[in-house]
Amino acid sequence: MAEEKKMFTVTIDNIKVEVEAGTTILMAARKIGGDIVPPTMCFYSKLDKTGGYCRTCLVRVSAGSTADPRPMPKLVASCRTAVMDGMVVENITNPAVLEARKGVVEFLLLNHPLDCPVCDQAGECDLQDLSYEHGKEGTRYEFKRRTFERIDLGPYIQLHMTRCILCYRCVHAANQVAGQREHGVLDRGDHAQIATYIQQSLESPMIGNVIDVCPVGALTDRTFRFKNRVWFTKPVDAHRDCPHCTGNVRLWLRGDDVLRVTARKDQWGEVEEWICNECRFEKKKVSDWTIEGPTRVDRHSVIGAGHYTGIRKPKEIFKEVMDGRDPKLLMDIHTVSDVNKVNLNEIPGPATGATFSGNPKSAGTNITDVKEGVGRNMLGTDSTNPNTP
Picture (cartoon, rainbow, N blue to C red):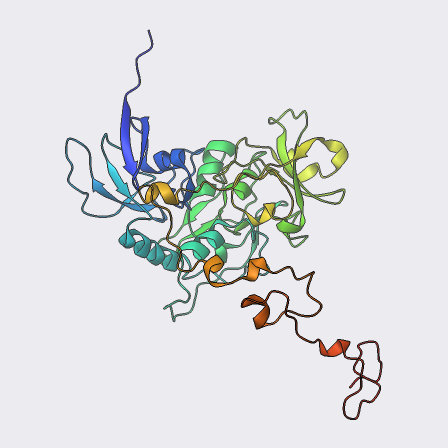
């Protein structure tokens, strides 16, 4: 008889969820979904020993457990902290957590260049999303930023170390997926960098997966660099019989051209199945693949804008977080304006203030529709008159 799993009940931002013992706060929040899920830059559920580096997932534990309800003295990393039965966690409901997250984002951006207009990761960059949601408008950093030269790590991968935030994901992916790691973090402190030390190539047949796990534009696909913006491409799911991997991939098309091939990702932006270099870099024809259909975008992303009708929208958790209360409207436009009661197709001219202030049939005069000339333009001010001044 199978041993019954021990279940813990944890409350995150006033929402209760039941999870197995040993689950981290972050994974418990992902089970709930929505805005209460802390952001992550270094944690990767598909890779072991990740998390705890970037500190973007900090939360406050206001009650440790039912047995010991004392709060934890400091903010904790939700990706590394296991839940306890009766634990109470505060994320977006605690101003101190949000302020600390702003500070973490400011640190991550200290040496990060403003390359978004030219970076291939733009549009699917986790750091872009993090900065937009939790960053500050400016920076207090006044010193010279560190810079590095771009390095080609073989024929397929380019390292742009200036953009790296040292999340260590690529190091763990090379260890656990590629099977042979030829790069790592060299030096310490502000001199730390991802490198191969003797400038050797990354040759593993699965090493291309480091591109997919990189949350920023530090590791890019050389076969795709500067070819197109991701929001102008159409992602479709496809597969092929591959002797090296499952062959389940995502193609990014522009017309009938395959601009790049990536692994399929879930709603958290994590790879579902690792793919080999042959599928990723060498199969760039539609005829090489069996197309399954358009990709279903499971996360809030610019990639899905204007492409699909069946996009699953992010879960709305405001009412649950606020104990069932509806959001308060600062102003209900329906009570102060008749703008939605006016049919602009029925009035003879342009709408004016009077049209929306109790007289929906009133209209102004469009000067381009006046037929009689006024002043020196005696031929009139009709827009079809080429002599109109």
